[in-house]
Image 1 (cartoon, rainbow, N blue to C red):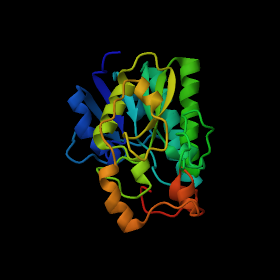
Image 2: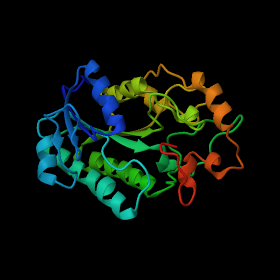
Image 3: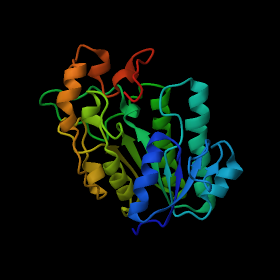
Image 4: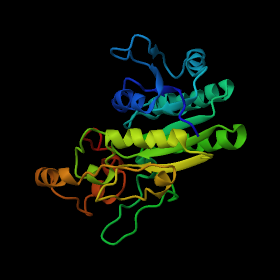
Length: 271
C-alpha cells in the first residue's frame, strides 16, 4: 500500500503527537493537525473537541488515513474517560466511515492487558492474542477501542492497526520502561508501517523498540514491515542504580501494567 499523502493526526498537541509532528513528515506525510488545545506554532491546526462531530467530520474530509492519538492518556474518572476516549473514538470512527477513510492507526495501550503477569526468567514473551485484562478505566477504554476497530472493519470495511504502545519518550524514565520503551524514531517507523502495510483488516500489535529486556512479542508488528532500530539497554545501568531493579513482590512490578494496577494508581506519570 503506498504511503497516504494526507494524514489526520489527532492529539497533535500532546506529548506523542508533538514527537510525531516532527518525525512523520520525513516519511512524506502531509499532516492535518487536530487537538482540543491549540497546537503551538501551527496556525492551521484544527482546534476542536472529539465531541464536536461536525468539526471532526470536516477534519476527516479528504484525508487518506488517520493516526488517532487523541484522548486521556492516564487514569481518570469514568465520566472523563467515557467522554474523551470511548465516545470520542466512536465519533472518530463514524467520521471516518462517513467520509470514506479506509485506514486508521489507533493508539491502544499496554494497559489494555495491564493485569497480565510480566515474563520472568525463561518465561516466553507475551503474545499479542493474550486475553485482555485492563488495569484501569483508561485501559478499559483502549480495550473498547480495539473492539470498535474490529466492528468497523467487519461491518464497514475500515481497516485499523491497533498499536498497544508501551512508553514513548525520548528516553526511558523508569526501570519498567526498559522493557516497554518505544523510542520516538521507532514510533515513527511503526506508525509508518501500520499506515502502509497491505491487507491489515484489524490487526493488533505491540509497540516498543527492540529492547533487550522486552516483555512482549513484536512478531505482529514486524509482519507489517516494522524494523525497530533502538534498544533501551544503554539506559539500564543508570536507572537501576537510581531506582532499584524490579521485584515480583511489588504489585506494581509483577504485572504488565506497572503502577496502573494499584488502587488507587500510583504514579509517576508515564509509569
